[in-house]
Length: 507
Image 1 (cartoon, rainbow, N blue to C red):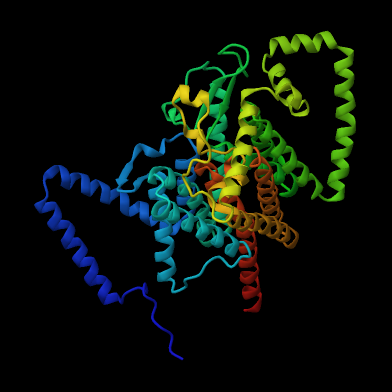
Image 2: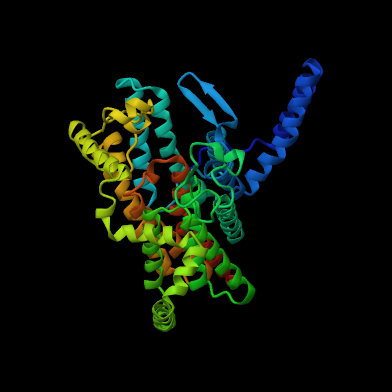
């Protein structure tokens, strides 16, 4: 049986020479005919673009990191904004589309079109397909404003990061570059969170003026360390880096300076996370870290138990032995009191029951459930408002939150229907089961650490998303897509190493 020639197969050597000559001639003719400024700009773009495309073709992990940087860091994505009749494309959209285009082209050249061979693939494809259907229905049938529809559709589209990572990260060195890059980007965000404590109510950098950053004077006075609450777009990224570093400490088997560096990374990320003053994230961290500890070998659990039996009673005795000293330290270090009060409020919900924030969450839950009752199957449509404005919103003129729901799962069900929510939960459940399975199959300490770290981090993100819409925010969904892919990449790297070893021994 003769195989059909792939559509995107490479042309013959003679045709490549002809095409190259035509390309050079076209560039020369353009430079000759175009105005000098246009020619100079075009040549500069060509000089930058060709090496850039080559780098992304040969080392696509840099493309993944660029998308994360543009989406979940200090850069405002609308620095470049290409307006279309139905909306606009910004830097992160262009980069995602470009990387997906390169992926398709590369698979054509390899004569190997396929989706990731993973149990996670089909649930995610189903969810993304329902997302496309919901967007088209909102635009063509329901007549919802395209700006709102495409804004919410963008968040769903960035789950495609799963495909970029699983299909492009094939080797151990690529995985290491990706992990180091993610930690560096998370570290930049953590530095900004901590440094902002010394800046009062002023924004630290121009890039933080995006609405994705929240910088609030919450406690004490501006300028006191710990007085500023900073919630960055890279919040989920810093969380992921903290959990990965903890699991590398537990499982990677590193010693000496490397282990110490990972420990410092873990501590630094968590200092940054503390100053977001986000209780739901703190609970997510406790969940992920607890699951990590449960998965450790018995001997490691025994050492951790011994350390806890020594440290906890010691701390309790110090508190009771020197109460005045502890109080003095609290006065000298002002963030201790607000951190304690914020954490303590988790266990005293009656203290926050009458706050505007909690009342707003109750209103969201009640009205979103009513909206689901009105359109249970396919939802109200992406971009639709699910409730009327409140008096306070009418007075302020800020009505965005008539479309926003903090609970990610209610968000999906309200906008896209219960069918889509079931598909999404299937994707989440499959990701957790697959990650656990891969962790148990692997023997390489580094790969085991990354597989478990990404899996428990994903579990933490799922719990966190009950309280915040991370599953429906672009700055979070791109990181969630990467997180879901990491365990699968670890498995692929392990299998590649096994096949290589078998081939060497076989020869």
